[in-house]
Structures are given as structure tokens and as C-alpha cells.
Amino acid sequence: SMNGYDHYMLKEIYEQPDALRNAMRGRLNDQDATAVFGGLNLTPQQLRSVERIILTGCGTSWHSALVGEYLIEELSRIPVNVEYASELRYRNPPIENNTLVFGITQSGETADTLAALNETKRKGHRALAICNVVGSSIAQASDGGVYLHAGPEIGVASTKAFTSQCCILAMLALYFGRMRHMSFETGGRIIEDLRRLPSAVEQALTCDAEVRKVAEKYESATNVLYLGRRYNFPTALEGALKLKEISYIHAEGYPAAEMKHGPIALVDKITPSIFIMPRGTTYDKVLANMEEVKARGGPVIAIASSDDTEIRKIADDVIMIPEVPEFLQPIVSVIPLQLLSYHIAVLRGCDVDKPRNLAKSVTVE
Ligand code: M6R
Image (cartoon, rainbow, N blue to C red; front, top):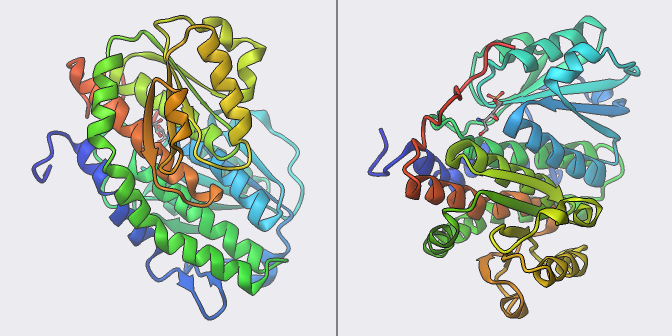
């Protein structure tokens, strides 16, 4: 049931702190400062010899794959490729030995993801699943994998599956890092950061009333731009997809620095740009991008760190999120974006849980 929430999507947004706790339960090992997974079905030797990881999926799961690319490359130093499952299955790319393929999927029933995994398996590569639904087709077809344990996701718009997938990918990055170069100390720090995550998400959810005001202001927009860099570039894509899916508003996500290469031509006084810019490596650069948009008369909304008081002087609207290390930012910064699309959809009278033209699992090509 909806437990007093108006829609499944809202209930699932609010379930995220618990979903993250469930994703981590029993999987963090302080003794060895690493993560543990019961179902990878590979020997430590096989795992240590992995030289490349391919992450594949569709839609929101493809966005978490993009987050996974940043995570695994930074924390494990293993080269990562991210592929749309629908393209991977027909492209027949040369894949080196010692490549590990992960299919990322909430439902475990997405036809393209299943076919992409089967294609790579046929060619002798190990294919694992990061999946929510136990016993699903993809869970069965894979050589092993990791379950999200996020509980059923009913709303067509994926929310808690995305944040759980990012969390699992962070733990996998820790795991691969610790069997290679990563120090005990760094591993321990990452575990601490992960443990603080559910309460950071709880705190991020308190922005709901603020987000609702922003939704009222922009509910009749026809185009919205979402901009972020590094870990928050996939977050921008995810925010844009959420708005398209349930509000039927055209939205685009870009790495903020790409604006000057074309999309900035779209900016006018009725086209809001949402900058996902918690403090981090590229904060100053993104701030400069925001000023460029402002100078061209575009409304700007900032998703910013809670101690960033300066940003209020520049952005038209600011939504504050708690500070977490950069590698965990997507899990926190996506929260206001999920809520924004939810509130705009409700204000526009859209069917939030069953948006037009969409199905929860896409079992056909
Ligand atoms: O069940 P999956 O994760 O394999 O589904 C993949 C996409 O169909 C899914 O993420 C879709 O994009 C959602 N409606 C996004 O909210």
C-alpha cells in the first residue's frame, strides 16, 4: 500500500534512507576495511585479475552506470566503459580477456539488458547483475551478482533503485580498490562515509517544502536544463529524465562545461537552468557557468551545499543539501531533483505513478 503517501513515487522517494541501509546491511567489513558480497561467484584470483569493467543498462540504470564509471575508476583504478544495453547487444565490440560485465537493472526483466548480458556471455566473458528483483530473468541469466534489497519499486519513475544502485557501485569500487592498491586507512574512511549516508539522505529529504515552492514557480516551463560536472553530470541526466517522464516537460542534462558548445543558445528568460553544484573539485567552474547563464537572462536554480551562503546572492532559487564526500554526492543531490519532478507532475495533474506511454519494465526491444 501507499502508507499514507499520495503516490508510490513519493513513498519510494522517502524510503531511500532505509533502502540504503538495506543495500549496506552485512556488506561492510571493518576488520578488513572493505565490502563483502556473497554472490559474485568469482574467486579472489579471478576478481584480482579483472582488467576492465563494462557497465550496461537502460534509462535510469544507465545513469547509475555512469556514476559507477566515476566511482570504479577513482577508487579501484580499473578502466570502465559504460554502454547502453540496446547498443551493446548489436555492436559486437572487441572485448579483451579479463573483462567483467555488469548488467544494472531494477526489474531484472529489461529485454535489452538481458540480451546484452547474453551476448557478452556467449563470447566468454563473465556477466554479473546488479539487480533489485530476486529471481528475475537477468538474475537467473547472470553468472552471479549483487541484489539491491531496495524492496518493490512500483512507481514507473525509478527513484530508490537509482540511489541503491549508486550505493552498491560505491561498495564494489571499495571492494575492488581494497584488493589492489587502496590502503586500510582509505578503506576505513570510505566505510565511515557510507555509514553516514542514510542520515544525509534523511536530511536532504527535509528540503521537500522548499522544492515544492520552486515547483510552483516553474510548473509551466516548457524546457529545463540540468547541469552538473563529474559525479553530478549523471545526476543532471537523471534529473532531466525524471522531469520528462512524469511531467512531460522537455528537459536536457549536460556536463555544465558543455553549455558554451551549444546548449546555451537555448537560454532565455522562461528556460530555467538547474545547477547541481555541491562543493567539490569543479565548484568554481560550475559557478562561472551559472554566471554565464544569468548574464543571458536565464533563471538559475542551485542545488548547493548547506553551508554555501554566497550562492544565494547569485542563484534565483537555492535548494540546500547536506555535505557528503564527492563520490557519494549523486545519492544526495538527486533527492531534490526527484522531488522537483514529483511536485511539478502533481501540479500539472499528471498521473505520477503511471505516466503516459511508459511501462515499469520494458520486456520488448
Ligand atoms: O528495470 P530496469 O532498471 O532495467 O529499467 C531500465 C529503464 O527502463 C528504467 O530505468 C526507466 O528508464 C525508468 N522509467 C526511469 O525512471
